[in-house]
Length: 302
Image 1 (cartoon, rainbow, N blue to C red):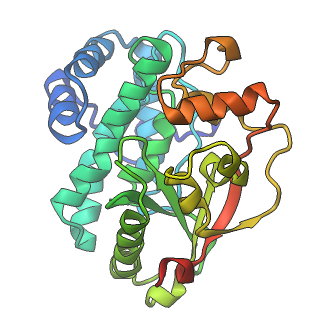
Image 2: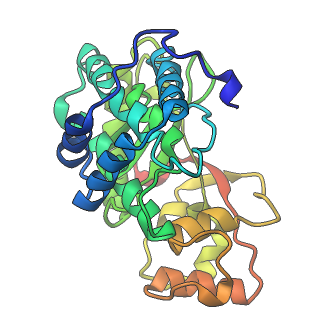
């Protein structure tokens, strides 16, 4: 996959952040923990020539597709440089801010979308016990101007032209997934996306929202308590297909349990109701699945 990246400097000179910029961006813009910011500064200083060239080429892929859809495909970071993908993301923040300014997106929303970086750094530390950003490619959607945090939910321009659907994503640290919070976010998106992308959406009638997530698995209704918000959220979608019959271990281990995928079931944590419910299903041989669905606005009263 590395061979598919632009060459270093192919689009513009790589504005690689220095230690002070890395620290400031992570703490002031991304909401990162001081421990992660400090480790990122150390990791920056430890980059060798090959890692610096990779960071440059990753940045070039962003610069070549500002305003593009979805997120880019990047190679996995080398084992000895697990934060190498973070630095081109931070280098692209000025590009993102310029894009936002041109589209009328205010700084508060720019900061909100970058808060996801701090969250994923925390998640990586919880999973692996060290600093890292194994999903750095995910943030190419953020810095290229495709993805926005609008209240509880994230919305990303993803589908085929001329009227690409908007992918709906849910941050782990976003707060309760109540129907009111979901409705407020969707109402915001119906107004926001046509205003920011008038060349794509003439108005809210052009928008279709989709979600592909373990949260939509209808089997969860049988295992979660009635007070859980997850089944109510899933009921807002019209499901398509049956999902992968082999199940979805990777997302569950990552987002529900915060553990590496090779962690044995017997060693998974049971610290909250969701973990205990999903684990009970696993022990009963339930094949939890990601499911794809289209949001039914009428079910939200919209």
